[in-house]
Amino acid sequence: MIKDRKGILVDNNGYLTLFWYYSDHAFYLMGNIDKEEMIKMTESIKMKKE
Image (cartoon, rainbow, N blue to C red; front, side, top):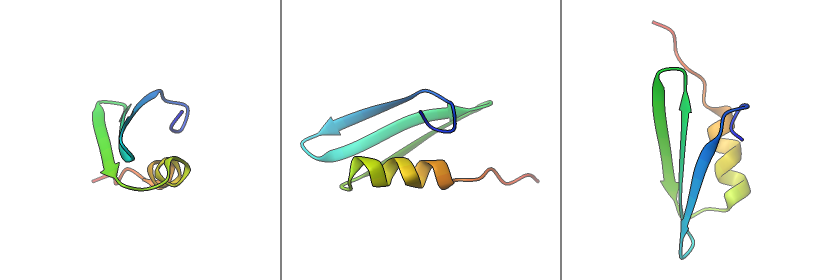
């Protein structure tokens, strides 16, 4: 769960891709990092209001 939202985590031989959505926006993060670290990164993202 990413801030109480469902996400999809794909592990391709250690290269992770995490997809999630928030409101009307969809996001993804890709990298060769630890799963827990990737989740921490996604949870730290804040939407900027314009």
